[in-house]
Image (tube, rainbow, N blue to C red; front, side):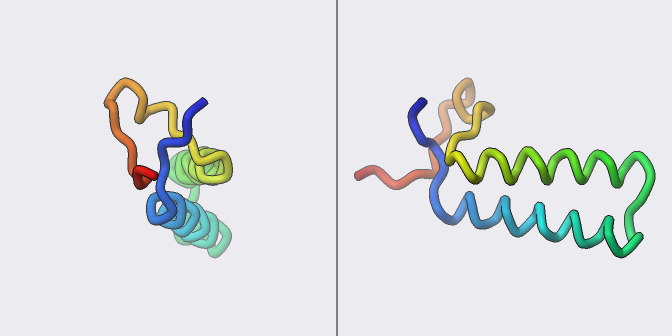
Length: 67
């Protein structure tokens, strides 16, 4: 598995996941939308922690700087 996420991409995903969790925790978003946001947040945290996004493969996207 080749890493395809840069540091900015990973940071934005973690920030969005934290924001979504906070909005759900404060009761600003709830119900089905809340669960969808929490699910996306979990996926964002997972992909950020491993540095690989499977959706980028078929789209041939990489935000990682070339070394």
